[in-house]
Picture 1: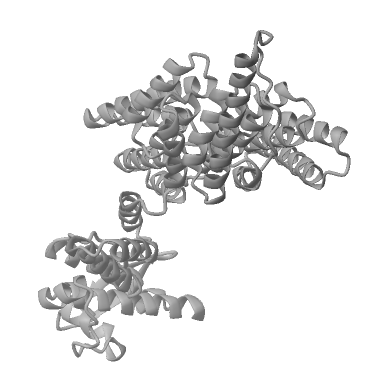
Picture 2 (picture 1 turned 30 degrees about the horizontal axis):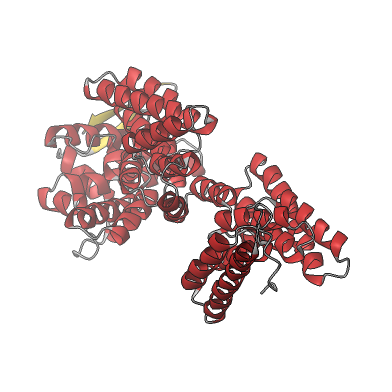
Length: 496
């Protein structure tokens, strides 16, 4: 602690022995208060130390060391702005007061004003060129200035992680700098680390409820978490405190525009005007690329519109963009999975439904996964409906007509004059057509096939299947059948 300096009371020249005694008594009383303050400071009872240094200052207001001691106490209490005022007063009273200049520099540095801090430390070195503390603090101030410069460049490059790193390093030397904290909080918000950003902004608002920058960051976090109405309230508050706050103004404008476009898109969708809904959601997506959560919802909404318009591949792309922005967005996974099902991309559908079920183990999600797994299993078998060229809801008569047409088309006798390779291919197709008819014409077998059951497990071995027997049984006739040429490349079927 600084040694006591003479108490330079500015007053009229003493007119007698009583005045001199009064002045001396004031000095002694002030020194007594200072000594008591020193004792409390040594015990780390900084609040009591502050009270006694204040009494010393009130008794002898022109003593530099008293202000210096109170500045040191305020610094220990983390009240750097008040401490700065006392330190500045101490050096105004005594410009050669080395500890006063050091404390002023430390306060400036703690508050983030590294340039002013450097000037203070340089003044100390003018007074005492061997002062090692001033030498070190001057290096610290230079380090902070360097981190500020790097952070400014990286913010422009949108390298927000680097900015957070620089601000963390700078805050080690400038723990009371609101400007550094706000920049860090803004970058945390832009990185999607909203709880951390909100915590930093809230700490500042507890100390200064009118801090426009902190109000802006609080709003920014809410805005990026898709709480747009609440966000707008914070932006408006920030603009009340600082009408020229450019970032708050821009964010407020974007938030209002985004909310309006999204609501208009939702209205158009509900009214069945899918083309307009698509346009509105697309316009909304162009407002603010940084708003990840809202944009994820907009992509999913546009994906729903595309699915309604039967633009399924575009719907899949939109849902993929949604989950890229928000990996936890269940609705987007469900929408994409349904589009995969509709386009018979069953493996992708199973993958999405598995992701959903792992996240939310509901009966509905379990059933959706099961259905997709069944369809995947079915897709890996022969598609008998496709072989016959009929829809999955085809009637019994439609299945018979399709079999008649395909069986005659691929019958081996019809291709007896073709090359060996063609004959082999047509024989294979003829057998498959018979297989398909055998399964789909039998209600029980068809039901098992439709449900995805393994037909071989049910005792039906298609490897021993004879397509000719099915053909004969279907067409019948005691004289058999034959194919006869009716012209080059043309055949007709004739019963015997």
